Image 1 (cartoon, one colour):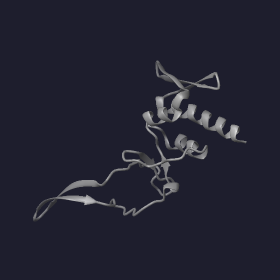
Image 2 (tube, one colour):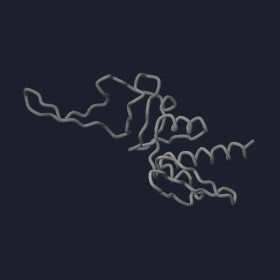
Image 3 (cartoon, rainbow, N blue to C red):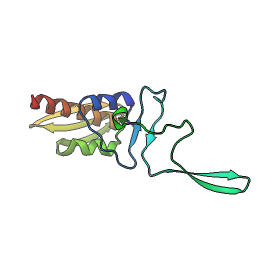
Image 4 (cartoon, one colour):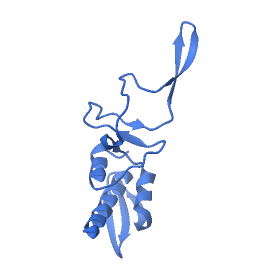
Length: 138
């Protein structure tokens, strides 16, 4: 899974998040830094009550976080989402020993990003593409 620090770098580089079911995210700076949240329709739990078992559809968790603005969150994209964001520039993912290499092609030049996980490699490549897009927009 992509770490919060690298995901924050992607956000700072201009990656925007269009939340969808199943997406993972973090909420920094609220004493929740180590928690990973997943967007879902609802949380469903079985509760034992004196009158019997019930299925509870809980809208909030035990610490009563009612809501949070998307801008306050950090999206933790999955490997497939990162690869999709690379689009037509993506050429190859290789694993050698405990290292992953992601190769992208941008304007005829090949760039290889090596990292300890596929997600980190994809993120490094995406950071490069976002920086190139930003430089091209100036």
